[in-house]
Image (cartoon, rainbow, N blue to C red; front, side, top):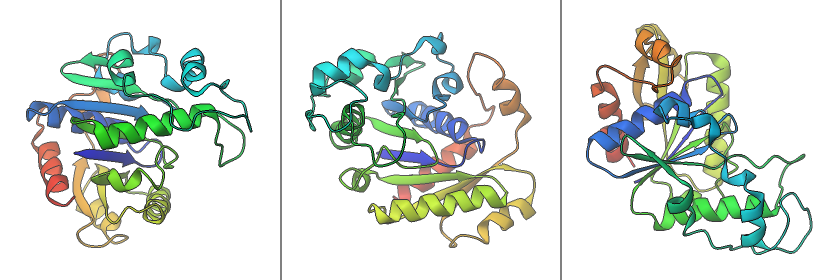
Length: 252
């Protein structure tokens, strides 16, 4: 199972991703979590010790130079577009509570459409993990879908957009869904976070087709408080997340 999670910043995307990882792990699956968000909060929400010291793959300049044959950040240079990446997860992932984590990072370049060495390296790595890795792979992305291309998006089994009951969050979700569709995603799922009442949920549902919303997570004081510490985000009753996981599996 390969899952991509996106959504506007601040909606609780990384929180949901970490809980989904825990749900799969507790169900007996091997889980590899990929943090491809520039804020890189997934390690903290998973409770990985010393998460501040983790170096994102995209910042490993010597490694990227070794594999691509070109200096990171160089534009218009010749470099390998299919560098060796199969050993990267084993070498650079960290494991905590049975979940492996690989922090990808974001290519930091001016403008759009960059095809630089680090971009090529990261896309090759993501493609490898989506095609070859036998674990459950859960990709925590930013609001865009820069880490997915036409050659890899089709290999994602489930594309999830996390939203909260607000117009800006919903507008971002719609843009992400449109971009994903243009790259070959045939179906996406919506998870509504920070829901206070039925009115909040119905408001979000009114913007999407009936079977698109696969679950809603109430505003949780437990999650809010646990997010302040170093032990990761916890939820006393994982039944709600487990039910969302099952719906995603059935609707992939």
